Amino acid sequence: MMSRALRGLVALGLILIGLLSASATVVAWQDPAAETSRKNQQTKVEAGTADLVRTFPIPSRNGGAVAYAMPLKNMTIDGKLDDWPADAERLPIKNLLNYPARYGLNGLDKVELSDNPNLSASFLAGYSKESGVIYLAIIVRDDKHIVDFESPFKTDSVEIFIDGKRSDIKIPAPEDPWEEHIDASQMPVLQYVGVAGNGAAYANKEGTNYTLKYGKIANTKTRMAYQTTGDLTVYEWAIQAFDQYPDSPTVLKPGKRIGLDIAVVDNDGGDSPSAWMCWGPLPNYFKGFNSSNLGDLILGEAP
Ligand SMILES: [Ca+2]
Ligand SMILES: [Ca+2]
Ligand SMILES: [Ca+2]
Image (cartoon, rainbow, N blue to C red; front, side):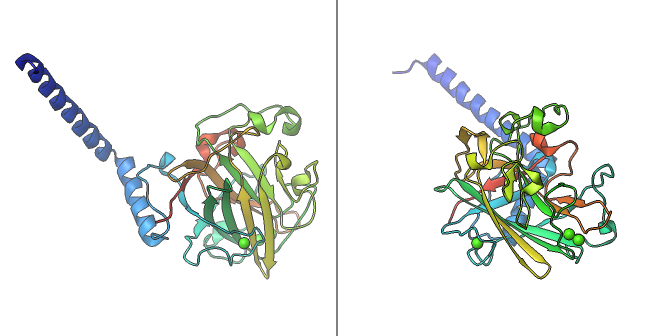
């Protein structure tokens, strides 16, 4: 039997717990950023593949980019989209970097970035828990297809930035040249690069057509294939994310958040600098060294 005093204490405890939970709930719902993010996510899901992808009540960072990856099976990495669900949500890549030291605007400041012949890009996202890879199909419309294997600044390409832990870590930039002073295992964000042509992407020493910057692509399950038809190029990727490269691959499961950005680089020949356009927040530093400067990819689950 509980004494009257003890019963009183238990009742008081329950009331306090109730008040604390109620006040926590109120605080959460009064946070304008969380509320805006919640509304955005609801809108996104209503407009997208609501049957395949469930919403998770997780606010984005910086009020920024959020994408949902749907579970996919039997994917073939061949640059063709026939294995993707017809209603897969297609998200625009249209944040144009203005950084004259390295990249130019290439006339893109005068056009509608989501739909123009010079450069417009979008992507689809999925994943396989069993295979341990994230699928991305990046669809690029570009009027002049240029490939170059000597300089990253003279070629069309796609760059993927991925942080399996979705951390918020910024590291100092190493001395130049970076290749000789840093290894992918020291970076909070991995950078994969693909070029739609035959050669060593960004002149990587392994000589592969897609590459892991500052690391070895052979230490990963990552693959990429592309198809070019007219002015459209599809870069289809199966990407391995890491908690710690190369020994700890990220375990993929519904609800998991991954730091992600996708950049499309457009060189159109001549002396004009390339344009650099991303999906996530514009860079405030090299994205490979700053994991708080990415969008969020949230792994969904099948209904
Ligand atoms: Ca395919
Ligand atoms: Ca172009
Ligand atoms: Ca181009």
